[in-house]
Length: 368
Image (cartoon, rainbow, N blue to C red; front, side, top):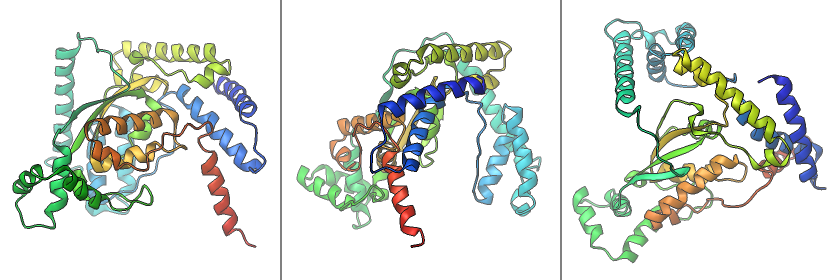
């Protein structure tokens, strides 16, 4: 996609948003400009290819860097292996002692070879056993696995540290409690939450939920940033179709959007036809959908769902976060009820309130 075409679509959408959402009297030009900029870029990011360059910063422990370098060393993409080599040079200037095993034949090299062998054999078997099976239709978010006794187990886990009973005995004790007694225990473990950063303790990690999700790649990249959970994804391709934001159609850009998506698919298919399936992902526009799983404890689910449902978030991952909460509440009502900082508000300009808060903070620190 040319920068000229992106600029043209940006100008059209920017003007359309300004007409639809006029500047309010109490908002400065800066707040309004930043809000419209964010809205326009958030909508148009889906036409950018997955290979779009961006800045990345990493802050980690020596052990984490050791693991990262060994995994990069066996990555199927040459550029990933190259970045690993560049990182190794820089890290050896500051933490050489932590990287001694990376190049050792019986340590780092052997580990990288093990991971590469596992990946290649697994991919070969997956292609052989599932390659001819067509995916069945699913909703955007699907709760595919949970523990029916999850609320009971969290209740028992809450009582564990304050008692001297074995874990299994506590669970049987909780099973015999009256519902209002169990509710009181869960309520005590939550306490009075005055903001979404107040989360219950480790006992809420006693039960897990596994979600199968199919949403656009841009939203996936935001959800992928949550680290205290298990996330696995399938190879990015155009096979699951793409998102067409309602605003794009309303602004008269549907035809151009569809042409760009079709061009993205053609480029992907041409690269993939040469056997370069991993490299072909670079050509896929971020508006195409990718399938992935999120597996998380109730504690992490609360954090993710509340954070990603906030009004300043992107519409796609807000929708995903809201569906996660709704499906948890359907199977575990008491746990779902504890997600007190979920947002289901309809918003037009997602970043407006955040920009207003930033400006108020800026005003407080300006010399007076």
